[in-house]
Image (cartoon, rainbow, N blue to C red; front, side, top):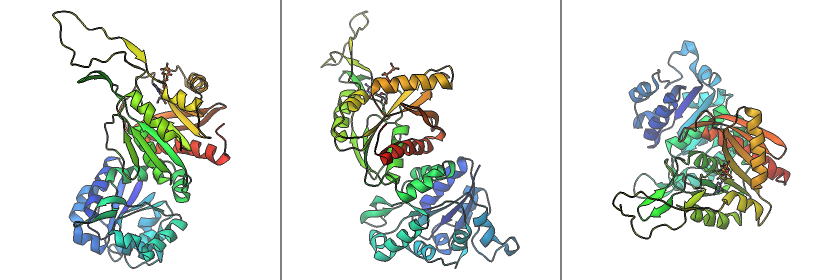
Length: 409
Ligand code: CTP
């Protein structure tokens, strides 16, 4: 359990912070809400107290004997400000201490995550741009706002990102401290990355298909994490059972053949490719053009042919130097066997990194967390357990290291 301070500034997106709070509390975190006076004009103290199950700290002059303006910041594992308005960013950048939240920001020694939300004009104003640059220079993680509909009829950059995305970033910062530095320095800036996600559907006839239980969560977490670290991301999404991320190019595909085409096209300009999708290994040799009818009592036999191994094809026909990552679900008796199987598959597929998952206890599809061992040709280069957004950053750490070395070996 971590101690999180949720700072809420006075913007209409404050209502979305309720969902952020609910998710953090359900995740088992102890959340202290510190709303500004203006935030309370949008969402009242009662709501924050009920959702957090804790007293709400609103003023430096309450419970003064407990020195809240120092204690709250000092004892936090993470300070998350959502929404961070233009005014809050300005006050934080200039080191003001004119209310409880800015006091907390000055006393916190833990990671600080700010999630701006405001009108496009305010976000793009040179004053705000300079304030964000100052905060980032000092190590604060400031997310870019999402594009979309703002209050009123206008739209553009300025929307608060989705609560689920905010919580994923918060979780990564808490569980994998290296993320703070990677996000702050944008270690993937200037890199083009392509990530595949989800399970394919192979058509039997116009209404039936052969599919699999992949949720696409790990691939989408990888795409989000790469965007956060500054990469230009293309997500090739097959069938997924969770919301698609925003702020990146998304190419939708259905079958393994479509996935192979989309990946080959996107790979031409990619610096890194991650095959997190679960493509079918077999597809019906001759899908029926019409709906297959029941014929008296007879059963149904379908001949299958093998699909393209996309990962192997991309690895063996590289248009440029790239870091290519595959996934492998293996049934191994112990960690040593998992690494052995992984290295053999890595060699077979020709990729540079393989993310191995031991499914001998039964494959768990659609879960939010996982355990992986990351191998390259020389052996284990990383291990991670936790939320898929955290595991995603461990995978990018390994990719980033290879990219920085200028070598995929
Ligand atoms: N993969 C692919 N194209 C396919 C099938 C799989 O690119 N037609 C990729 C997956 O996205 C994943 C990796 O290959 O990154 C793992 O594939 P896996 O099914 O474990 O490998 P196989 O070669 O099928 O090995 P096994 O015989 O152990 O199932």
